[in-house]
Image: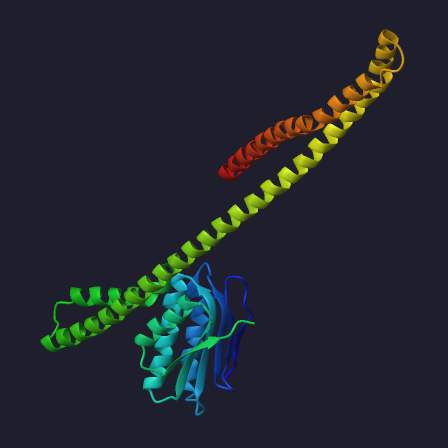
Length: 128
Length: 172
């Protein structure tokens, strides 16, 4: 299966969904004008990824600095999809990274975690 | 579908429900099954609403904090600009005072002292010296006065610039 790579901009995050390594990363700022247009390919990719029945543990790494309200809904859709894969027996973990002192992002991770069954790790990154 | 934005899946579910309600020959079991689904979707939607509300409040909070920081920085910047303006005006006022003093000194040497000498005769150094002393004493008040006038003008210029910037911002 092909990997999905989208280079980030000032409004959209970097996407690197690597099917071979089973590492899916989303990094940066997410404030696109049309969130669903940006996130739809990611959701479709996840559907196909689930069908390949990966044997390795899948890591979904989220490291966002900021996201707008509509992105929060799309991110939840991604998590629900990953949650579905987990319920179907796939080994999955969501790693939610937040920068030191960014309590808002830490709490956002906790809010997402409350809605999901999939293992959800919230990890702090120390500022450079 | 595309126009429904991030809620396209939820809109599709609503369409499905509305179509279901329009059906006439529906069995009780089908109703039960459909209500079960509605309840599941409702739960999902409630979770989303809770999450989006929290995220939105947090974003607002973040923006408020950033605005507060920006205001503090603006005040800091304004204070620095004021200090710089004060320093610049002070330098100009000193220059003006020096030029006036040089002018007065030249007048004293070239006009006043020869007048004293011709009127009172030579040897009246004391009077010439006193006149120079007056010039020296005048230096500080001249500097203060110039500083006040220049500061008034600088503030007026800054205010008119602020007003025109505001007009430009409003127009754009």
